[in-house]
Image (cartoon, rainbow over all chains, first blue to last red; front, side, top):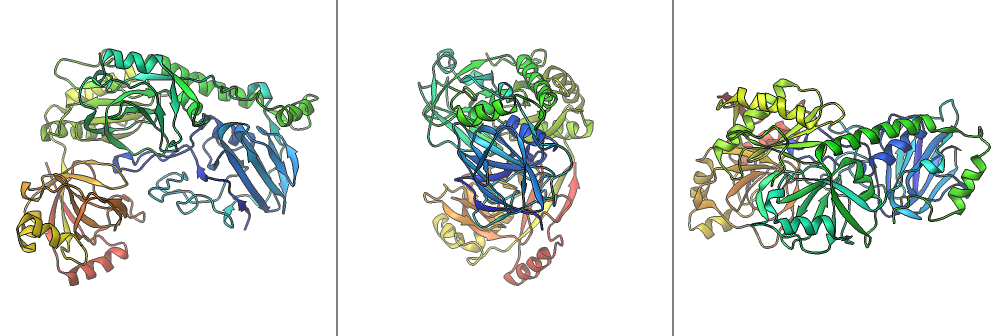
Length: 339
Length: 250
């Protein structure tokens, strides 16, 4: 059976798609890709639907061996060095690897998370309508677990489909600027004006105890108007709880569905990739936008992704391809521009 | 100021609160209250019936309904208008709800805190079981983990603080007491709640059309069964057969 065998999965890798919706009322976490844009681009590069499940890896991508006639794959997300049998190839590009080839994805130069997509997708069953892995409840992905050395990722296609490999010009790679935009609420009124002012004007540093469930921050205390406990209600993606110590926690892909801390604001969906690619120790600032503005920005982001699809180049078709390869492999620090 | 969504918040109606560009909270109250929860569940039922384009799912809780939506299909201000109409349409009507009878084997083998809890409360194990089976519980919310139903209605005599040292694994099917609430564990999980018994009913079974047995708003009664009966029903449940029954009532 066609597969990618897992030689080394890197420190933490799981299968993720756009998330498991429809079961939050039963306490099932949504999970899904932390950086939705990067997942969509990785899929675009291999000709998949944007929501196909891919391997989400963290800081280091790992090594995989092709156990199929051939396999078209792509890597997107942070700036990760990619090689096939030791030969460097470009990120934000699809490549076709033959049987027995080793795909190696090194340590991120910029960013945190990357996505390994394959043409045709990984052949794992949907669980409650999604292939996303949620470790705490053991649902989805590869038997509800993280990838492990010696394991195997089944492929739907025995060989790469017809058509050319594609690449995305470097100037179109996603970039971020350290500002995270938020919509105030739902419990904005449980904070003092000074508390809100602090939250929106001071930098907050990402704590090392941050993961797919949530990012903790360290910074000036955000003052509650009264009790910080509320009778539990739902938690949206990007909800910003202010816990008893006055420090923010942003709840992300693997968040629980309900919770009892007051939530001052919610990160807009367009800026969740900024968080997904920001490392512990870095500082971010929060800026409030209106709900209409947030909805408009979401539309702009989705239109932008369609524009990217139209901007993909065919491998071997452009004189600037070599220059692109050189830039992506030899020049560090120009990508993403996160800080 | 709570920055409610414009146009949504009437004097007696619920508050519409934004939770980013993909979720809207309809808040009927801020306390644990049956009447508030009734309104949440009435709107939840009405939203399900209305099948509003762009609404992805709803998350009912004690006192609010979170409506998850796709802003590319419907904008919050239009969603508020649709929901406002549904709120006034539902009025004080109560959603039809299911009343479950859940079989439970209360024993020290299947509920290792049963004897400790009875002793702590100064009652016999049988008296404790009578208290626990003598109440009708209401599912206020499901959260924390898949299928974990928060049940209101636990007799005061049984209120017990959680363990200081949570157990790393409470088995699926466990019936437990934590604080002022009781709960049924649909999957195995770490927990500080006190285990008093186990049900053979599967709270979560992917083989079913509806994988989760219990939904928010349901009513629950527990029925004590013997270890032999537990073994018999457990074998049936393992084969995918239903071992818990419900009736529907307004």
